[in-house]
Length: 355
Image (cartoon, rainbow, N blue to C red; front, side, top):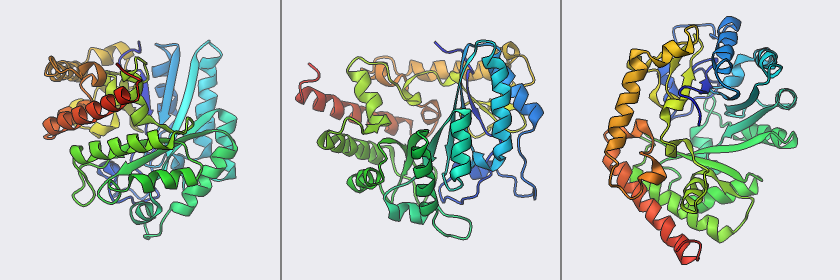
């Protein structure tokens, strides 16, 4: 079992990005008054790597944004150099980076192959939706650049699949979405519900219905290479497996978002809320864990999970996403998830995979 605050999500350029996606939740941490991009300094970078590598043997770093490639190639060469000092001491380190893909070219793909990074790409579907929502500042679609980047990553065998946001423009187009991805040779997919944006957000119930349609299409397509992580997690747990998306682990305390000044917060769905600032990477790990804010976070988690006692699905979802449990939607989210779980369980029984 992983320790608390042991899965780092690093934001070397905070919310800065070369795209202006209409629904992006990272706009709230942009610093428009600054004319020069603020990139995580070498001192903060080294201290961050040391903070997480010093108290565990197996560390999984996720590099996030905004658009993390804006930190530049030399930044990631330095990451690799600093991590090698810990690898030589017996630590196992893996790196994942989530990018919008528009900047990935031969040079970037070669670098990530060289330093052992696996690269996930944000890509909405079908094409008409991506063209509308994921644009450069001038309003031009990024799609052709993103698909070019994905092809480069596939060539290097370092492509880690796509994250596709689901909102008003595509929640009723599950078949078109899957057809688009399969036409592009993309077989590893994760979906995210758009929330908090009046124009694009959908309800928890609409999203659950979307996922159930995706599940039925996945069964119909019957391609063992097609991995839909949201569906895989539910099916695997129902069949007695252990694969869990983060929302079903019940361990939100494991995830630590580190901003470019070294400050530590929980997973970035909380967007650097002051009451959830746990400390900085310049403090001892143990001091951060016993800090008032982190202990309050743990206590709040325990209280919300107690509300799940008696629910027959609690062993599957483990309380679900903690951020969602704190929202005004929490009742609707639970009912939507229960409906989705029941539908998938019934289908698995129908196919003789469950008794």
